[in-house]
Image (cartoon, rainbow, N blue to C red):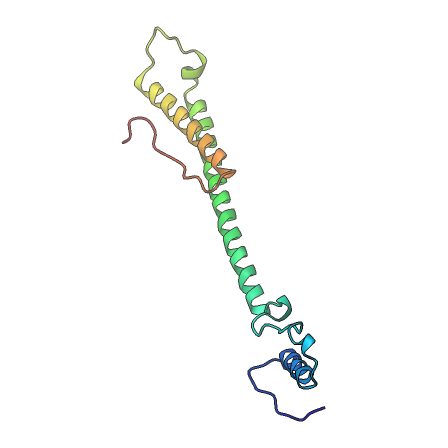
Length: 145
């Protein structure tokens, strides 16, 4: 074995591969010169560093945490609007129980009816957005621009 110093910018495997190619070429065995694989300095054997693996895992966790946070946010708003619709229904039973189409309901009853419809629709929008968290929920209702 030779005691030549190795250059600092090569890995052990690269140095051995290069030394093998040189020794075969010096010995006159030219047929092996093109067949000797030269290991890549930056990616020997498709190995990844632990640091890059941890960066990828961290980024995946941050993205999943953001998505799950958005899902929880949408779920809570859906529950809120569903509960508000039920509360408005309980406060105005005459609008939904004994509503006569010919007789006009009072202004307060109409407002309760509008609130029930509004909260029901918003609850449905938020509930459907739970399964598609990238969708922006449109909270505009009625005559809003």
